[in-house]
Length: 504
Image 1 (cartoon, rainbow, N blue to C red):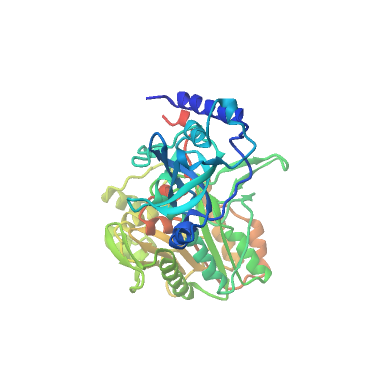
Image 2 (image 1 turned 120 degrees about the vertical axis):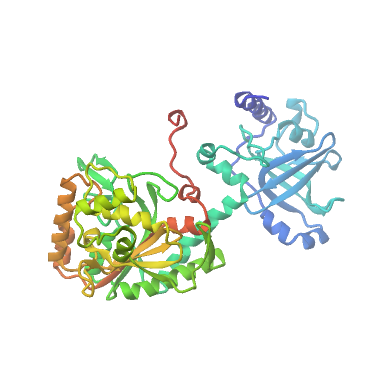
């Protein structure tokens, strides 16, 4: 079996042959009368009228010998077979060539001599149906539009190694129709969310990706150096949460952003370090109104993108139009672990973790992280769609405290299939309370919790000018991956990978 270098050397020699007869292997001008999809959609009419068509595409496979050559072309819309016959007096599209300079007798022979699987070609001819019933273009003229130097893998086998699939994602997409369709659905997913919000008078905004303080979430940020300003800056960990709430202060009542965020944390089937997130903010609303709207959004997006509200998640059948459960955070933990997280001290929480054999790092453990670990052990058992409510105030520094259940906040999370698929809350708009919450977060950071939030004085200052009551919500591409039934890495188009030489 020839090595890649040997194959490249052979193909480079074919480039030289083309150059010798006056053909550039990478022309900029391409002629096309139809996409392959359009030809297939109108094939019968085109065949009956013997209309000449010009299509372009990648040679996915080649077969035949002697005076016949069959090729399968793919242009990203569909695939179609083309037949080249030696006795058809085929011509090359560029008339200013001299085949004699390479001792080649015909354009058919030139094709056989220089074209390989994976090359891009332009074919002009008439539609007909072969004896085997295959819709085909009988080639009258052809032209190379891009020469490949590497062959694509055999499409019947594709790329089996997962790391290689992710590194060579473009080949994986080329050979995997379902993966291509998933990318199309991914685009439709975000567009459906965008349309849902735009029809409800939200405006789309863009907020800074580089920040002097990473705000809006509990997460470890990426740090980089800003040369012009000579200072460290952070890649954002939320889709502009604090910036969008400043826009509420400015008098713009409904905003949203769909953008990339970055969290310097662990990798898993549900966690990536850079991913797409939606966040929206709605003035003069609260989390109870938000629940109704968000449920409507999930159902509408599912119907438009997946054509159904029924999914199989974590081995269970789920229907989004059914009534959603109400999961009580404090009650669930007390029921499963025997501790009331609103009153328990750190020693009681650690004891509960040990009793349930939940692993944790004792160094740096605090009330917040211990409580979160107890919750995550329960979360994986909650399959039916629902809203998680009554979250302790010490876990959410940006949400308004509940007046009905002191010690908790007016916040909900979407729970489905044992995972969290979105979070929303009544926004805290009391600047005095917000300062106290930030100061508590600072103490956590000083104690070694590098995921605790930083105090943002500029945000407090904006709030002091007056911020209206509001509801805010965010979801990430995890929602798309879960509904698609694939991991977060598989759902991304180009997941982050170590360079090949460093991957061992």
